[in-house]
Image (cartoon, rainbow, N blue to C red; front, side):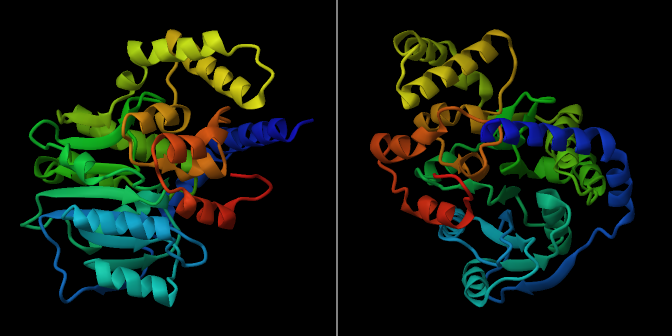
Length: 347
């Protein structure tokens, strides 16, 4: 049996275990266990929280802050955001702590409980957000590599007069939602009962499935039910538009049956996207449509896609060529990090 098939069976078995067998015991455990897992909080004397605040969730089991994350934090600060840095690592190495103390308005160190939403919940509560002067709050995490393309123009496109809640991408899997690796909310949302009620409902249930379904999907759905307008900068429908589909059809028409592995992988994935579009079967855009996103100016690539490839995207081995040759992006920081995290697989 091939290693890819073993991984597929393992993921399927783990999914069934968490969604069918252990879901309710883990749900009950999450409701009973303590919520606040803050170990230590530091606040800057010189950097005060401004009108736009980013609550950034970090995790690294060794307490590091890798160069890609450091670059991301610097970029957020350049975009005019005050940063509340929340790490689920339980500790930070001295050089990492020194870095965030120089850059951030506050640093919160907590235990690794509740995933990103647990960290964001503690960060919002600890800093008493929103405050009187708060205009917008952004939630971000380190689940992406980047920005690998200029982020300031991307950030400038977020118009809270046009929508109340913004994401970079949206998804129709499970139910419609903004993907949670980067989210922004205006003051109307922050003052709403829907916002406060959502965070009261966030519990440290130790299963990623619950977090995705009840938190990532649940947040957007709660805001939509409350009458708020949610929008993505790279909406799913634009990524599988008629123009994009026509391009994929050309790939599949020119390259089917090739015996060259990279060409075959590209053709297989093109067919996968075309079939899903025809059947109205939604894909995860940050995984399956990674190439379309990068060509459209998307500034990130998902860490999980490069390190684990959970949905077994056939053509992801092309990522270095797309970034380096087509977009002129320096891939060295990503490769350095992959050297640290990859096991039994090449980048």
